[in-house]
Amino acid sequence: MGKPGLRPTDELVRLAIIGDGAAFTELWDTYVDSLKAYLKGRMKILDDFYVDDICSRSFEKAFRQIRTYDPAKSQFSTWLMKIAHNTAVDTVEQESRTLRQYVSIDADASAGSAAWKVGSGDDTPLESIIRSESQVETEKYIEGLPELYRQIARMRLLDGLQYKEIAEETGLALNTVRTRIRRSKDMIEKIKKEEQI
Image 1 (cartoon, rainbow, N blue to C red):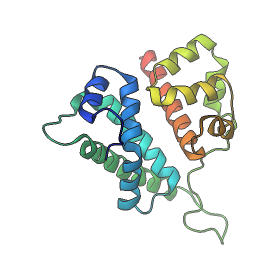
Image 2: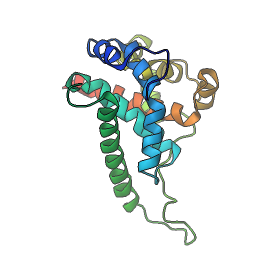
Image 3: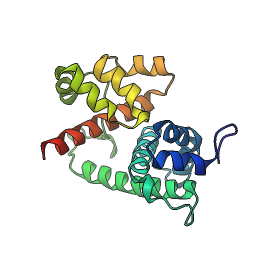
Image 4: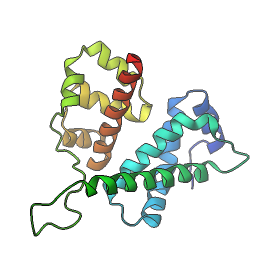
């Protein structure tokens, strides 16, 4: 499952546990393709956007829970796939609940036409608030994100680049950019709420 030339998984996990963001990013690079293949194979109802989103969420959860990983109980890939499976089930259930709330006024609309709106890259109200805050404060929130999200969060929330521009500059797929921006905003919002408590 690992890619040649990269450090062994156990060493990367050990470094990630002590807070090495680069090691965690290397774990992402090593396992993301396998994780996507696993999700596409097991949950055929998921499109590429959802697969990218679930991969990002799964790695975010793994990053937060890395200290609970026990190599004596399972391989890292197995542990990660279990997180991804649970995240996918939760996502499908949440999406299913959301779609049940929509009422179509278009007689020709298909059942799934009220799908999740991904966004065009225009500022959302949350992005406008984040951008209107001081540069220093926004930078502080971005620095609190896992390394996987920092660059894209900076490009979007500090530099104001559109999704397509970020995709072109980073070489990432547009869906991956959208997913990481959405996850970055969710994490920043969570950090702000925790500060207010």
